[in-house]
Length: 207
Length: 207
DNA sequence: ACATGTGAACTGCTTCACAGCG
DNA sequence: CGCTGTGAAGCAGTTCACATGT
Image 1 (cartoon, chains in turn cyan, red, green, brown):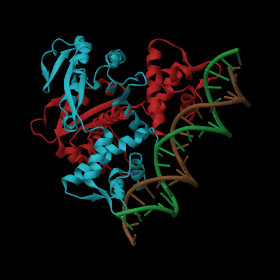
Image 2: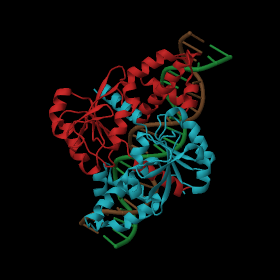
Image 3: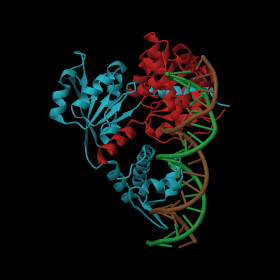
């Protein structure tokens, strides 16, 4: 398959949200123009994004909401359950564990990990906290698809190396560190400090 | 000033982190090559990024670590304290309130806001929780620079409108919703669900 | 000799504009 | 006629390659 731009995938996620909303409201069809307006982009962009994956619309009419919804879920791989582990049972790990948006879209949190003996064994927001020492054996047994790193920067690369070696191919990193992984492993980063610095830059450099 | 790409600003944040580390280790100079290797980019990219703001290096030698550090802090607007409010005292708000990386870089959290009377009045991770009803009057008095939205999607646009109307020009949004604001207001979004969907896509569409 | 700074070339994402089809 | 689907054009960000300064 042709390589798809990151920006395209992010917009597909956005369209998906609107379509879910439209479905709830019982709307039968939607135009690229409508999706664009809501998503802060252009109708041409919407059509181009979708065109990479097929022809989902009807000329002169627009897109069937349920049909496009199904197509987008398929494209994004949301037609199945993904097994997720959270590494780090601190405040951020806890916030993630209780986040309803995950389960809702098929991301099932199967366990959290921490080194702190105080936390190990106790449930965290309904998720079992296990000892980091078990990480490799657990991954071999439970075969999670995704690891979320909610740990300090210092250990982030070391822990990434461990989960990668154990066979994980997708990682979401919350540590404010630039991590390196093999090409067949996808690493996405959420860096709050960096976003704030972007705001600081914007506030400072406005004419 | 020429418009600076978002991607450039993000990379400057990354370089800043490495320079802080280099300074701690007492290194005097660093080359664009070294910064590139650590940051997962190319030396030409590093030099181009910096060139938008001036000439900070010495040919044949590289960049002075302390000098480039000072320059980057200046560029990113980190030479001052930024006043931040957190709207939403839930789990995510709590995780943000205790996050040490903020204060460390000059982002001072002056208050959190919530509608829940159980939470109002009690401190959250050392931050005072106030009633959302006071939002406008407090903003007028305290003049925060940045608002962080850690609230459910349903209210996110309404709350954004309120803080914008009260004079806030920079917003960091954690709600998984596409928000719209006037052009003179910078809105950055952190969307965990969307990042996970990006991973789902990557896992699904690999050849 | 070495590493920066930068115009030029390139790559790839976005926008345009219109043919195609319901 | 209206709106999609899509080549072509336009534009922005990245990479190249070398002149420049130490």
